[in-house]
Image (cartoon, rainbow, N blue to C red; front, side, top):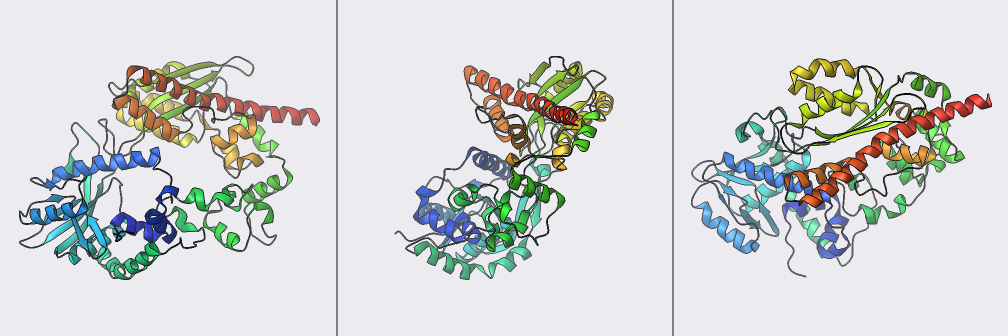
Amino acid sequence: MPEPRVSKSRYLQGLQCPKLLWHVYNARDLLPPVDEATQAIFDQGHEVGLLAQKLFPGGLCIEGNIDFDEVESRSRELLARHVPLFEPGFRHGYVIARADVLAPAGPDSWDLIEVKSATSVSDVYLDDLAVQRHCYEGAGVRIRSTSLMHLDNTYVKQGAVEPSHLFTRVDVTEAVSKRMKFIARRIVRMLRVIESAKSPEVEIGPQCSSPYPCPLIPVCWKDVRETKNSIFDLVRIGGKAWPLYRQGVLTTASIPAEARLSRAQKIQVDAEKSGRPHVNLRAVRKFLSSLRYPLHYLDFETFGFAIPLLDGTRPWQQVPFQFSLHVAPGANAPMAHHSWIWDGRGDPRGMLLEELRRHVGEQGSIVAYAAAFEKARLSECASALPGLAPWVEGILDRVVDLLAPFRSFSVYFPAQSGSASMKRVLPALTGKSYKDLAIREGGQASREFARVTFGNAGGEERRRVLRELEEYCGLDTQGMADIVQALEAFTRRAGARA
């Protein structure tokens, strides 16, 4: 085995889980490839990093696709120029690191700067900076300060993006210094793991999802994921699942009688033990009585970029680019379907509001699932378009959240596995699902729209994706109508039995 090198990313993986670290060096073929969602985050992070470089005029970038020995040689050569350096690389012992920015801070010292596409400081970023500083100082580079440069979520784009306002720079030197004292010992332990003949045995635990979802989850969690009614699926169980799991409690049915459960958890456990749904008919009737025809089933799809695309938007602000609207004029009347999707020109928010106003009229409930999201998007659109604000304010009181009876566990089916999401409720109540669609969830919808709208997709591919987007969003609103009809059927059958 070649001499191992511990990069900053490998160091962070070692902090998260030694089993993950071992696999990265010794059984990488067992790790799944980076998924599209993660790759999209990486891509946006790269764009953010390039934009941040504009804040350091005269900076020089060390090529990223050359051998590390050459990276280090080039980095040392450029240190003498005493200009900002982007992606310089150095080695100290077994540790290698490349900083986002190394900025001159005096005749013989430098500021070490990490650039993130996030909007705040987190502990993992401090560990990232700590191992970089450990490496650089060990390599003879004198560091005056360490700082994190992240996006300012109060920045609102107007015209060209202004990097000096988009970014916030936070000095974290003290916090990083406290972490550095542990690095040498940790590196020694990590090298022992890497050079071990076999993977360390590590029980699953909270580290599997912190600070990032571990790529070994499909391997380590295989048995748990195949367990029906797993303890980890108990609603709002959070970290309380771990003590039960360590006691050998694997399913909701095996929860000890003395365990303290919430009302919702008791409902779930009872339903899963009996195999029968829980339906609070009084609560369901009350919810249904709050609906007023014509019913307008509404769903948005959105995109959000680290670097704002549209004037009047902030980093990562979710901007609606599509809606689906099914309108039921009466209890037994056929529904009409209206859909709209942005063509990539102009500002979608005004177009969306105008198109929506054509179809929602002045009466009837506007039904959304997890309606706080749709209401927030409507309010944001209204803030950007004051002329339409009175209309938006007028319809917000008409919005009804279809999630409500499921979030309160007035209705719960065993097939929901502790979740009240639309993706679980729809198949549990109606048998319909998203599994046969090309686009199956909102993150994928956003990525696909961005790819064919702002990328290099051809005309036919774009038309195909737009059809798939319409099918996906349309199922969301048709599915809401189906769920309401299923709830109505429960009340009718109960009335017939009474």
